Amino acid sequence: MKIPHDTHVAVADGQRFVLFRNDGDEDILNLVDADSPTVSDSNRSGANPEPQDLDERGHAAGVAEFLNQQVLTHAIERLLIVADPQTLGVMRDHYHGELQKRLVGELPKTLTNVDTQQIEQAIAAA
Image 1 (cartoon, helix red, strand yellow):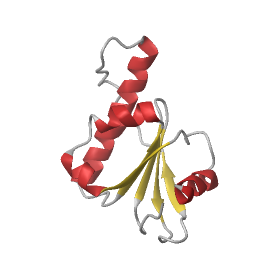
Image 2 (cartoon, one colour):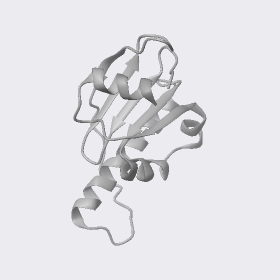
Image 3 (cartoon, one colour):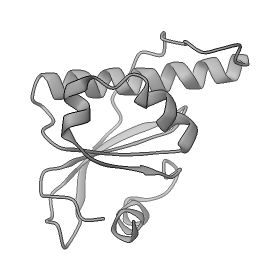
Image 4 (tube, one colour):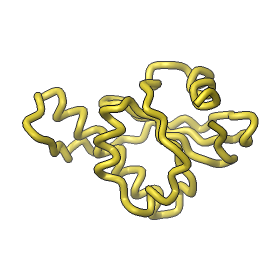
């Protein structure tokens, strides 16, 4: 997958969240400015989930809410979301319409515990 210069890349799972920016171009990905913003985990909606699932759902919803806010304030113009399938599903339920317009893609993979180079390789291979 090729992503344009200055596209933000959100890498998340039910417990971790890292936000990068592509300082490279569509041909050579260079993820920089790694940040782990604090997100609210209070939105724990779901049908009869286990307690651990509540925490993970709350975190995923919090990541989506954070990204919605960043998009609405124009801090993020283009966005790629990389998350495990379960987290991605919860996040989708919380996407604002404007976030959906700015998505350049989604990658359903668990990459929160790998280094930046491996994340770049997974994106390039997608």
